[in-house]
Amino acid sequence: MAGADSLHCLVEVPKGSRNKYEWDERLQAIKLARFLFSSVVYPTDYGFIQGTLTEKGSGLDAMVCVGAPTFPGIVIPVKAIAVFRTRDEAGQDDKVLCVPHEDPNWNHMDELDDLPQTLRTEIEHFWSIYKEPEGKPVEIQGWEDRACALDVIEQGRRRAAEARRD
Image: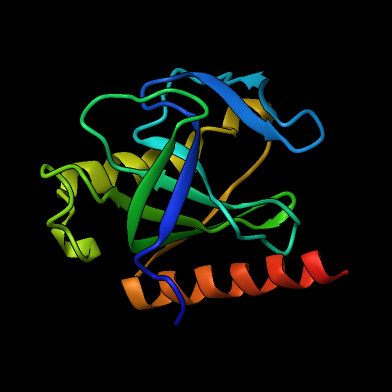
């Protein structure tokens, strides 16, 4: 499997934000997409793994565990440790859980069981309710291990490679 250790996450939304920022490929910039209508905040930095595509055509979502929020547009070298599987109105919506390579508070974690249970619960709760006030249900499918996360990433890389060839 090529480059499991060479993952880079482009952060769109910093931890603690209620603003939803998104990378706009046409503008080559991050733009404000919407404000969350719920009183919850993103529990991790949130963005996408560069060089991947989902079936919906966007970069594969990634959550990056950080002690303090970074900022939109920063690229963080990360290691995938799990995947949180959800489905929304647009279809399958996997989110790879990552830790920064260069942060000793997190980089010792290799799998989901290494993550503090309180953070895992906060992540589950956030994704289960964040679209509720908009009337958009989210189906929580649960956590999968690192091997599944790496498989999801590899599928995303293949889709991106195919899209570049087209």
